[in-house]
Length: 164
Image 1: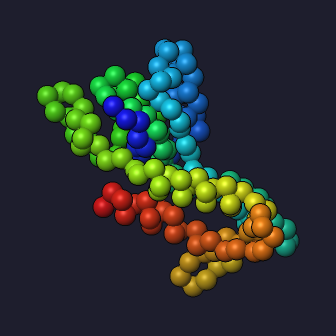
Image 2: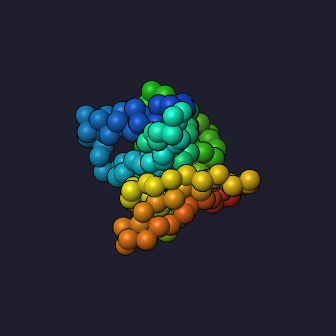
């Protein structure tokens, strides 16, 4: 079976810990071939603080969710479900007590590449955050030397449209 990207629901605030649990347990149990990559999409933002200072922090695109590239079968499904702080896969149904792999929606590789590209571009030097009436924009100094602005909610909108 092919390895595809899936969205896994975790307890909010434990995304990084779940990622390390998955990677460590996969090595210990010798199932590294089932789980290829675990991704916690984040962005670096600059927030204004009192006194005109700026605070740099890391924000998750999808609090409570991680992306996993894996081969989905009964063993891998149970492996992920038994990781502490994992709630389950987004979508999917049990059939006769077993997971039906066709019922779990996967994310297309181009969408994941867009997410990774946006993460890498935003990791450039963050200059400022502007607030519009409707949206917040992250202004970064692009690797190619010019400034770019990203609507912060844009990526979330694209991903959640996949599951609606």
